[in-house]
Length: 287
Length: 138
Image (cartoon, rainbow over all chains, first blue to last red; front, side):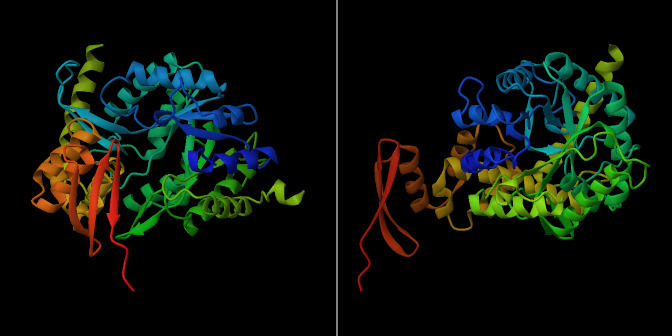
């Protein structure tokens, strides 16, 4: 479960009985100088991963040193095993002049064109980020409601090459994959099989809703059935559905994200549902 | 290095053009209208939700989300969320709501208006805003 202020007590409770393997904090909401005590306490028990949302690794400009520094400082403060960000652009300047650009802020994660040219820039951005971070970087697939007309690579091809050329890890967001596949009209289960699964550091899942025939990853609704199915499908892939013996290490850790309507009863219900779907009943209840 | 700079310049121009269209609610050439229209809605909704967090009085403006999203389409975000609220508020042609907003931003001490069908006295004290209502009669 992703750490949010509203459920700090619940996560401490989960961690105490062994029901929480790791957690994640939004880097932009966490000042390395003033870390919530409850988070510091939790980091003594489970790994805490700093998760950035405004770096813009798939933007045209190099990742900003101050944003990278914040991620690095949080990783050191928590003793994190990994830092994560998204394969997305979040802003666009009209000129490379760092002093007088007109910068449009999207305030949201948007997909880059999936071309060779864009891939070159993203590879370079990831390498720059890696050189400034004290721990490995994992990059996440975003929920994209559109594709670009000039795309020449599939999302799986784009991510596979990014992983191969930079050695970065992946945060595989199953709900995002479902959203993107629905919007582009591809088969999410087939897409899942062609992602670089051996590079996955951990898995994200979140709730959302259907709007106008598309799936919107809101992080404010409950998990939908097709996303839970896809997650279970992922489990079979790691267990060896298409590769004898499965993959070394088996299924990576799975984390639930909730950003709006974050309440203890709501999170508890969704977390129980997720655990049941993964065949991981609560250790707390078994005691 | 020049190659890399050229690639960045090309990507920058392209992303700037497409983001300009998305923020304005236009479908960029060659894109799917359904997916981009929904993306615009998500972008505008995130922006109005951020505004609501710093300016809860927005909720008292009738049809405020639609108004805010129309404003957003014509005004790309410039500055911080507080600037956004200030610029939006200046476009609102609703004297009663404008007075309410002024109490919240500290430029007016108090105002009397109707909220939820009841006369409400709204007064700012320091950084807090109080809403006082006459107790309902039975």
